[in-house]
Length: 141
Image (cartoon, rainbow, N blue to C red; front, top):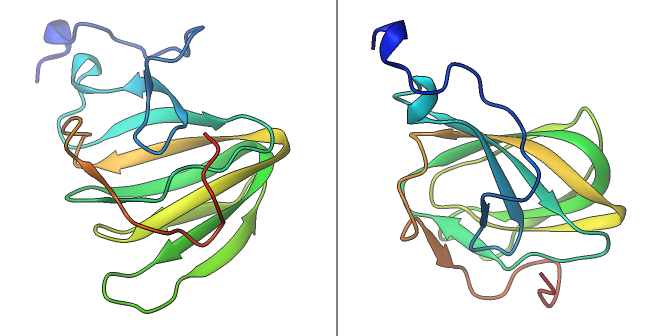
């Protein structure tokens, strides 16, 4: 892609969220096709204080998360596994959500904010599917 064909040369965090994710978190798109990205996308994801996301799994995308602020817990389960595992996260922590893995996350008392790199770029509303019961309890987001 030629540089002069990029509609938005720089992605910037805006005010209100661009979308609510299927898991209930808020999404602010930072880098996508309009910025010249053909094989990935980057967004900021936030979950309010004390909230628990809905458990979901992705059909075709892999995500890498980098925690910016707040704290929380992340539960992940591999496809076909009987049980998942949970980890605590805070600023500077990074983790992967592989394709097909079920996941759920919660925010601590100050909320949770992380960068999310998606490969390939987010394809649309059909990407995430409900994953049944998660490992962090009843969703509140």
